[in-house]
Image 1 (spheres, rainbow, N blue to C red):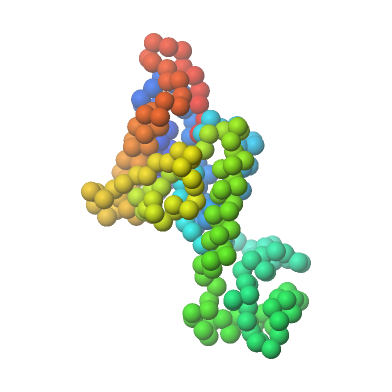
Image 2 (cartoon, rainbow, N blue to C red):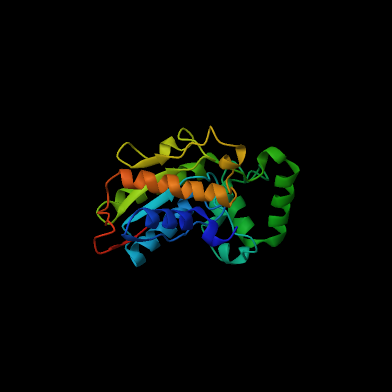
Length: 232
């Protein structure tokens, strides 16, 4: 799928079809990023672009993700906090005779020790580094902080796509946060895929545009009025 087929581009198309107001929708979506990473991107976008609205789409949970072909060495250089983030006390338990702080220091300092830890983790599938509760709580905390600090700077809404559920992400926001849940229970299975085909993304755009206009957040120009410009 090309960028112009993704749902942000389709939302821009749908908004501009419905109004003489000119809308621009910027897509900062990154596959696999979890909310704590999305917050960093959203905060930078608010600072640089001053958007009228940020659509914070919730679809991933758990441990922070690395992008394909990313050079991991830049994330673990020196005394990087990533060591402690990924190797939590309930993960880094070998050897049991040593306290966690000592194990962590040895992992940072010794490639041979890291190899031993990796072998031990891979040998015990149930202890692989997956979605630890502490990582998920970090996502929740980062999102709540972002929503609080965005007040007065821009409007932020939560968007839950059909690939997720309202219940799944209920702890991420409170009743004061505008929320759109896009339901596709009556649609074919492809409408609930994380990355659906182009026609599904066009449907996303139409439904989100309808929902946004129903909120009466923006002054929408008619065909006889001079167009204005909005950024999302």
